[in-house]
Amino acid sequence: DHFLLASTPSRPVVAPRLGAWVIATMLLNSRLAAAAEVGAARLAGCRRRLPSSGEATGVLAVQKRSVSKLILIRHGQSIWNGKNTRFTGWCDVPLTVQGRVEAVAAGQLLRARGFEATKVDVAFSSELQRAHETCELALASMAGPDQESWCSDRIRRDSRLNERHYGVVQGEFKDADHVQETYGADTIREWRRSMHAKPPPLDESHPHFLPSPAPRTESLADCQRRTLDCFYDAIMPALMDEEGLPTPADERVVIVVAHSNTIRSLMAYLDDVPEEVRFTSMITHHPSRLT
Image (cartoon, rainbow, N blue to C red):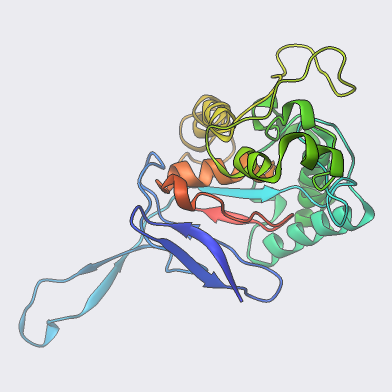
């Protein structure tokens, strides 16, 4: 019972499920550019081997350092997830009751792991309500009885974190007969699993058309490109450079609540995952921590 957590450039790394939750931890350099050890848990520091000297040969010391932490959470279940799943994309659908419970559970997990709401410097979410509400509920749950310790003003919404746009099939059931008959199973699979294929664009007559700056269709590469724009323009400065935050730049905690394709595209980029193994399954509401 395994699933993909992350990978090195040469091979994917898998880890067993830990109860209902799995946390992926990556040790990155000061610019969050080069991934090292990946796993469900690791020492909070870097090990170095001491010079050999008599009986001291082989002794390991721990050289501790402080690092900022980036926590990624996919939103809870929406009304278009689950049994009768749709190509949701930029359609702004709400969470289900289960999705709200999942968001609270994500916050409880993080609080149990030492991440109280007071430790979160900034939280980012997409513009879509399913991500924003998940973020609010998770932060409230992380606050526990100290609800005055967090504020929704700490959440910064950014449309570049929105889910991938599915063009003309946006809003359609993924297994709808007319969709399968019109485009074919192989073509649909290519849209969903290759980096550069994309559905036909929608136009103003489509029931889910949105005006610019919303795209009319996207490939996974298009989605990754705007996600990385957000990462470098907004998320990285909050982790490393932004002034006026309560925590020093090397000890910050930043949360990002977004969507399957935006989160996996960010993780794939940071860990330099080859295209053929980029399709990590992002379960709703399960936090991943990048340190």
